[in-house]
Structure formats: C-alpha cells, structure tokens
Length: 167
Image (cartoon, rainbow, N blue to C red; front, side, top):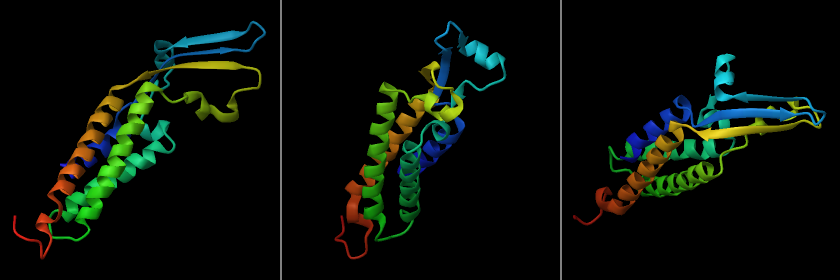
C-alpha cells in the first residue's frame, strides 16, 4: 500500500496544481496601482497555478524522500530483506512529516511573492491571493496513505524476516 501510494503522491507532486493565484495587486504608493483577477492572469496566457514541486522549496524534498522510502518498502516486500523494518520506520516518519507539512500549507498557503525575488522594485507593495488547488488535497490523502502503508508494514514487523518465529 505504501509503495503504490508513494507512486501516486510522486505523480501528484509534479502533475497537479496544488496552489492557485486567485488575484494579484500591486501598489507603488504614489497612486499607481494594478489589480488582476485569476481570469485576467489566465487570459494573459500565464499559468495561475503551481505544482508542489514549483511552489515548495523544502517540503517537496521531504515529500520526495517519503515517496522514495515508500517505493523502497514496496521493492523490499518482494523478498525477505532485513532493511524492510528500517524502510517501514522511515516511511512512517517521512510520510507523517509530509502529512503535517501539507496540513500546515493548507492552513497557511505559501507566499508566492517570494518567488519573484528582486523583480519587485523597492517601495512597491505586492499582494497575491493564493487559493488551494485540487492537488494539495489529493496529495494530503496520498501522504496519509503512504504513512498508513508504512505503519502496516512496521506492524507486520519481522513476520517475513529469516529466523523469525512462525506467526
């Protein structure tokens, strides 16, 4: 379960919009201002959404590591591998951390202005209204499934390990 969920989470990280730009406004302080809605942004040919990989800087790496641990758990489940319990623990830890970080970003969406860096001139006040895309909710469900799959593998424990007593 953890391995399949990890593959789904990995696909969701790259393929679905996790956050959307619902509006944009800038005020130069001298009476000059601009305001755009998401319809205006899309009409200009710009993409008004961002995937997890585009928006996050650290969280996406943690999600990626959770996916690798889940896929590794799937691969070790095909044989009696002593790394299975270690990978199960890593999957639970990284998956759980991913769940918490995704929940944090649902409650407090990322500041997409930071991605513009020095492109904003000094003295210009910029506000971006960030909305939640379907990808963030699907990613949360997949991260929960990865964590639960790791928990199930950890609970099964050493049942498949060589020298373990029969169940």
